[in-house]
Image (tube, rainbow, N blue to C red; front, side, top):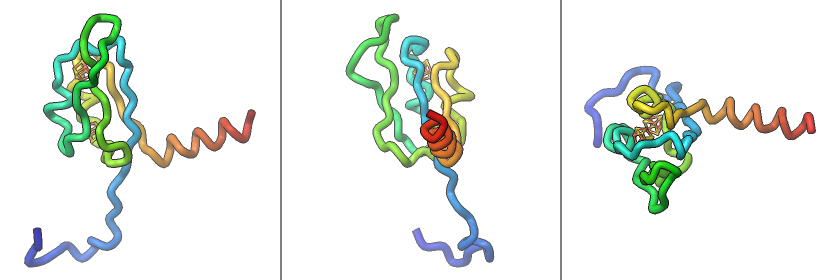
Length: 98
Ligand code: SF4
Ligand code: SF4
Protein backbone atom coordinates (compact mmCIF):
# COMPACT_ATOMS: atom_id res chain seq x y z
CA UNK A 1 0.00 0.00 0.00
CA UNK A 2 1.42 3.37 -0.99
CA UNK A 3 1.03 6.23 1.46
CA UNK A 4 0.68 9.79 0.14
CA UNK A 5 3.11 10.96 2.82
CA UNK A 6 5.40 9.32 5.34
CA UNK A 7 6.83 10.37 8.71
CA UNK A 8 10.23 12.06 8.38
CA UNK A 9 11.97 9.40 10.47
CA UNK A 10 10.65 6.41 8.51
CA UNK A 11 14.14 5.30 7.51
CA UNK A 12 15.29 5.23 11.14
CA UNK A 13 12.47 3.05 12.45
CA UNK A 14 13.36 -0.60 12.85
CA UNK A 15 10.84 -3.34 13.45
CA UNK A 16 11.66 -5.29 16.58
CA UNK A 17 11.89 -9.04 16.23
CA UNK A 18 10.90 -11.55 18.85
CA UNK A 19 11.55 -15.15 19.66
CA UNK A 20 8.42 -16.98 20.77
CA UNK A 21 8.46 -19.78 23.31
CA UNK A 22 5.55 -22.10 24.01
CA UNK A 23 5.27 -24.16 27.19
CA UNK A 24 3.20 -26.83 25.51
CA UNK A 25 1.98 -28.77 28.54
CA UNK A 26 0.44 -25.64 30.10
CA UNK A 27 -1.66 -24.93 27.00
CA UNK A 28 -5.41 -25.62 27.10
CA UNK A 29 -5.94 -25.19 23.38
CA UNK A 30 -8.18 -22.12 23.60
CA UNK A 31 -6.64 -20.61 20.47
CA UNK A 32 -6.61 -17.01 21.76
CA UNK A 33 -2.95 -16.53 20.86
CA UNK A 34 -3.59 -17.89 17.36
CA UNK A 35 -6.67 -15.74 16.81
CA UNK A 36 -5.22 -12.49 18.10
CA UNK A 37 -1.58 -12.52 16.98
CA UNK A 38 -1.53 -9.35 14.84
CA UNK A 39 0.64 -10.91 12.15
CA UNK A 40 -0.89 -14.40 12.22
CA UNK A 41 2.19 -16.51 12.69
CA UNK A 42 0.64 -19.09 15.03
CA UNK A 43 -1.53 -22.09 14.27
CA UNK A 44 -2.58 -25.29 16.06
CA UNK A 45 -0.02 -28.07 15.94
CA UNK A 46 -0.98 -31.60 14.98
CA UNK A 47 0.23 -33.26 18.16
CA UNK A 48 -1.34 -33.38 21.62
CA UNK A 49 0.13 -32.13 24.88
CA UNK A 50 -0.15 -33.91 28.22
CA UNK A 51 -3.60 -32.42 28.79
CA UNK A 52 -4.87 -33.69 25.44
CA UNK A 53 -4.95 -30.35 23.62
CA UNK A 54 -3.24 -29.17 20.47
CA UNK A 55 -0.76 -26.47 21.52
CA UNK A 56 0.10 -23.68 19.07
CA UNK A 57 3.08 -23.79 16.77
CA UNK A 58 4.90 -21.03 14.94
CA UNK A 59 4.34 -20.95 11.19
CA UNK A 60 6.71 -18.14 10.21
CA UNK A 61 9.76 -18.18 12.43
CA UNK A 62 11.57 -14.86 12.41
CA UNK A 63 8.47 -12.77 11.73
CA UNK A 64 7.34 -12.23 15.32
CA UNK A 65 7.41 -8.51 16.13
CA UNK A 66 7.72 -9.07 19.89
CA UNK A 67 4.46 -7.28 20.68
CA UNK A 68 3.82 -9.65 23.66
CA UNK A 69 0.13 -9.80 22.84
CA UNK A 70 0.02 -13.61 22.88
CA UNK A 71 1.75 -13.48 26.27
CA UNK A 72 -0.79 -11.01 27.67
CA UNK A 73 -3.84 -12.83 26.36
CA UNK A 74 -2.89 -16.41 27.24
CA UNK A 75 -4.92 -17.51 30.28
CA UNK A 76 -2.42 -20.26 31.13
CA UNK A 77 0.86 -18.29 30.86
CA UNK A 78 1.90 -20.85 28.25
CA UNK A 79 3.42 -18.56 25.63
CA UNK A 80 5.82 -15.64 25.73
CA UNK A 81 8.22 -13.74 23.54
CA UNK A 82 11.60 -12.17 24.14
CA UNK A 83 13.57 -9.72 22.05
CA UNK A 84 15.37 -11.80 19.41
CA UNK A 85 18.58 -9.73 19.68
CA UNK A 86 18.68 -10.24 23.46
CA UNK A 87 18.03 -13.98 23.05
CA UNK A 88 20.89 -14.26 20.51
CA UNK A 89 23.25 -12.32 22.80
CA UNK A 90 22.36 -14.57 25.74
CA UNK A 91 22.99 -17.65 23.59
CA UNK A 92 26.43 -16.28 22.59
CA UNK A 93 27.30 -15.64 26.25
CA UNK A 94 26.32 -19.12 27.35
CA UNK A 95 28.26 -20.73 24.47
CA UNK A 96 31.43 -18.76 25.20
CA UNK A 97 31.14 -19.49 28.96
CA UNK A 98 30.99 -23.26 28.37
S1 SF4 B 1 4.68 -11.58 20.36
FE1 SF4 B 1 3.09 -10.66 19.03
S2 SF4 B 1 3.78 -11.07 16.93
FE2 SF4 B 1 4.94 -12.45 18.28
S3 SF4 B 1 3.73 -14.38 18.27
FE3 SF4 B 1 3.07 -13.14 20.05
S4 SF4 B 1 1.28 -11.98 19.34
FE4 SF4 B 1 2.38 -12.74 17.50
S1 SF4 C 1 -3.62 -18.67 24.47
FE1 SF4 C 1 -2.34 -20.01 25.76
S2 SF4 C 1 -3.71 -21.69 26.36
FE2 SF4 C 1 -4.67 -20.65 24.60
S3 SF4 C 1 -3.92 -21.80 22.77
FE3 SF4 C 1 -2.50 -20.09 23.12
S4 SF4 C 1 -0.82 -20.98 24.39
FE4 SF4 C 1 -2.61 -22.36 24.52
